Length: 432
Image (cartoon, rainbow, N blue to C red; front, side):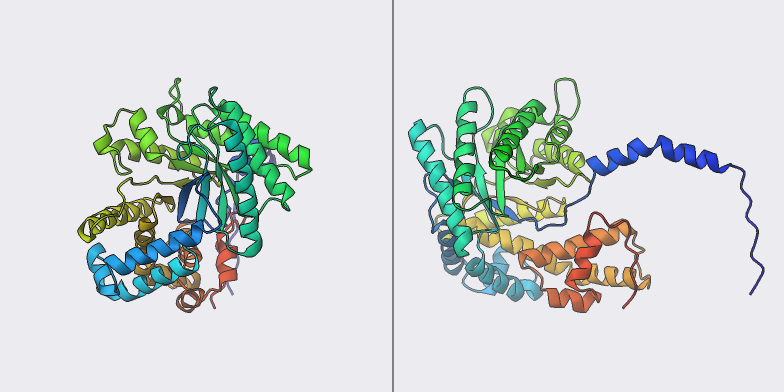
């Protein structure tokens, strides 16, 4: 063994200590503001149902309607794939998985709507509907018929409806507490947020509720709905959405883009209001950059073209929805809105095709990284983490099976979860 080479330095140890001390506050700020993705499941969509029409059978009804649409307008794998342009080798796996998903778990995230989908009602009527929603959500979680995520969208905190928004939120949350407590999958959506101060006010509301019921501080989180231009670019030229995330004080879980309100706000005529309009792309790009690293997730909007009517019309709507969903996935918007049961077949077809067509390449790149085997792509640790997140999202939604991912990567689900953890500093692993 050769003689160890001597290493020379020029700086005293005090220099390093001084620099480290000067950056202590920055280290703490980075950890607070940018904790990374929480590593939990993100639903592929959100379904909105008006508060007065939501029933104990709503989720199963959406699944059954979606299955009937699939059976009527694309009764087999080949016809479904032909409509959407799914590659032949994926036609059967995607069709079979979509069918199974609609039978097993047709809705991943459901929001009982007390805003635009519900409208202004007499106070007594909305009181009753909010209390009923709490009872039905509690019963659904208790008997196993709930979606993985459920909650309400209350009215916004603008002056005209502020009191109503606060009261509906209070009634719903109080009803959940009286029925046994807050479910793990509870989600609240605050719409039409324009100023960070509105986020601050909602945080205060949730703090007051937690204190009233002895809940842990921070138990209640919420999504911020981006539906106005002022939420993207404030009057002073800053990105207001970034300030909203900060104002949420760690409670923000998502930024949801509102296609039609935002489009109308910036003057897009009705015929061109869509999630792929340049105005929509700009807004979502700002949202995406503002949310990056914060643990706050971004959701795309929806299409208002419904797959109803004769088969050619349904097919046209399906192709539009499938294309918009695939476009969003490629842009790292892994969640969107679905407005009709007929959207469910193409939501899952787009999601499943996205994950299955990239499975072997992603798994091979990850396996090569783990084994330090190289290959034709040299991946960085951050990319390896992105590959793991891709595979985990595919598993969570049903596009991929844990066993096939383990076979292709050599990693168990527990190992994938550990490497995806935002608290893990690196991706140094031992080859199997």
